[in-house]
Amino acid sequence: MDFNDKFKKAVRENFNRSTRDYLLLEEEYGFFDSLTASLISAVGLSDQRKESITSILDIGCGTGSSTRRLNELFPGAYVVGLDLSEKMVAAAEKNHPDLDFICGDGENIDSYFPPNLFNLIIYPASLFLMPDQAKTLAAAEKLLKENGIVAASILLGLKEKTNREVENLPIFRGILKNVSVEDIFEALFDGVESKAVTIELDQHLLSAIYRIEALSAGAFQGKTKEERNQELKRLLAEVERENLTLMQEWRFIFGHKRKTSN
Image 1 (tube, rainbow, N blue to C red):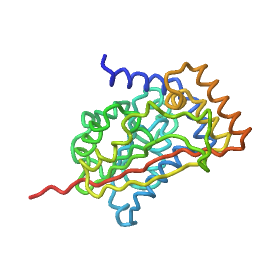
Image 2 (cartoon, helix red, strand yellow):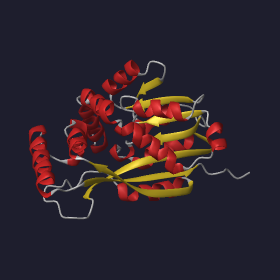
Image 3 (tube, helix red, strand yellow):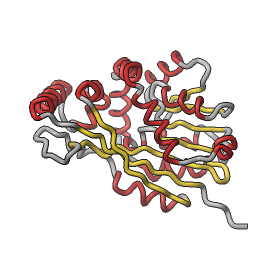
């Protein structure tokens, strides 16, 4: 098994173990629901353009909150969610029985769908978890209809709001190739835009996010579950003691399918 397969296996297993906590996070905070809405807002679609979107693929849909939000934002459009974790997909199907979901590998989306099918392809919070980002984006390009749009939210890490030094801050060493994602977009799509976004995390939300195994594994690389919990306790204690405010740093990237020359 090569590195990519091992990495995806670990991601799938982490999310399979995190389904319940992920559901609780969304129930209390609607975090990924809100992130999806913010990404669509950043794309800046006109009302007329929104009405022209009839088919949407949600890659890395988790328990389905992003898929549901897309269904609400684009009434009448066909929306399908895809996720690598079978337990996440099972939860999505249970919670959103009126929507369609597929358990599959986001790097190989062109093996599940025919070309030129979707007006919009979204990676709500998943592209940075894929070891071969060029492969999945090339597949997305094939699946887009003419003038179709691809958009992704890329998590870059954490920082203190006023740029104060934080001793126990995770440094996100293991997030893959995110500095080059924009280059991949530029190579495949037209009209590429990139926007920096920060999300403030109070102590309760910070704790809720990074107690989830699938999310803490990305923040505290190479550590056991117990070690990650101890790291989080130290971080939370420092945040409270020093009256710090932590911000997640995200980058929203989107582009359009290139017109084919006659």
